[in-house]
Length: 101
Image (cartoon, rainbow, N blue to C red; front, side, top):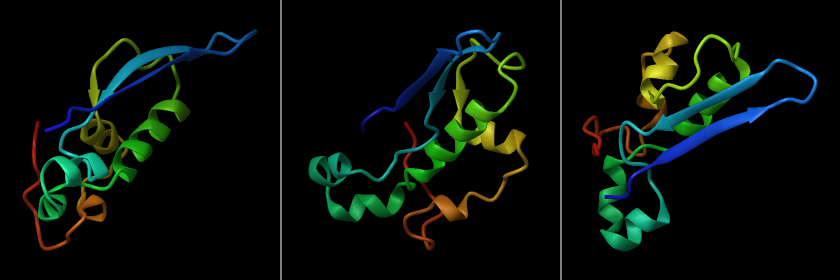
């Protein structure tokens, strides 16, 4: 299974905003690579890519001084924001079991 890692880092000139935190995937994401390497049926056990996008958005819009230099999972970041129902990210709503890394 493919692994996922999104490094969010940067700084703003003239401002004291600096951040660097790896954002890890909790489960497999439905991609063309998964479909090609495995089969189309495997996609139903994956999540949509919007979960990593939402988690990245949260990390980029929160105060950069509160969390930096930590390895964070997408689910963990979203749960800190009060999102606990991850059904919206499922490719197949009937499948509650997602592929883990």
